[in-house]
Each structure stands twice: as structure tokens, then as C-alpha cells.
Amino acid sequence: MSAKDHPNNAPGVPMVFPPWFERFQIRYINPALKPIARYLPGTATIEHRGRKSGKPYKTIVTTYRKGDVLAIALAHGKTDWVKNVLAAGEADVHYTRSDVHIVNPRIVPAGSDGQGLPRMARMQVGRMGVFVANIA
Image (tube, rainbow, N blue to C red):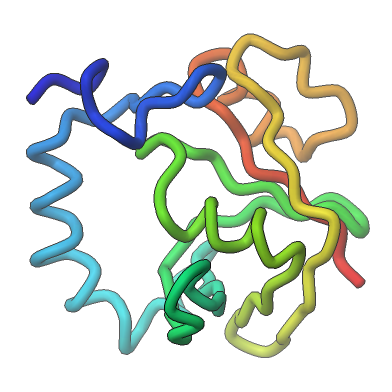
């Protein structure tokens, strides 16, 4: 299956990585990083609940912060964690020394100017969608 036919490939939120890399990351990289993700620079764990099951999940993400705005580049497209947080309208993000609660989640589509986003997220919004939320 090509990236353009993948279910995560949504309008304004294209998949940048090929599907084989996503499977590799889910199977091998994420389990290895999960215990230490909170201690790696720039990484955090986002806690969310399933849209249908209500089951709690923890997903490793790379975050960018500017004031009370949190941004996450969506290189894998519109994945389940993004859909879950958009449906719930909130989530918790855990860093090494701090925990934040995010509200008002939204997606800035690829190709936007990225006004008001952290610098690293502005650099990436030309190619991929960016998840943005306010820190409560």
C-alpha cells in the first residue's frame, strides 16, 4: 500500500513517511523508547482515550512549545491518537519534569503559513499537517 492510499493520509494532513516505516516504528522503535521517552530532549508522552473503547493510551510524540501553544508535526498523517484527542477535545502531555493539560486541539493543514506556531513547527507545516493545542 502506498502512502497516498493509506487511511492516515487525509486532506491537509499527508503522510510523509512510507507505510513500512510506520509499521517498523510501531513494532520496534516505540516499545524501545516508551520507558525513556520522558527523558529524551523534545519528546513527550501524550495520554489519550480511545474514541470508541474509552481505553487509555500513551503515545510518544515530539513536541514544540511557544508560550501556551503546543505543536506536534504529523509526519505519519492523521493517526489514531490525533483522532482520539480531536474527539475528546483534551489530553495530558507528560515531559521529564512537568505535566501539562492541553485543550482546544486542532490541525493546521500542510501548506499553511503557520503564523503563531513554534519555529520548528513553522518549518514543517509546509510539508505536513501540524497538530496544535492550547495549554490549560
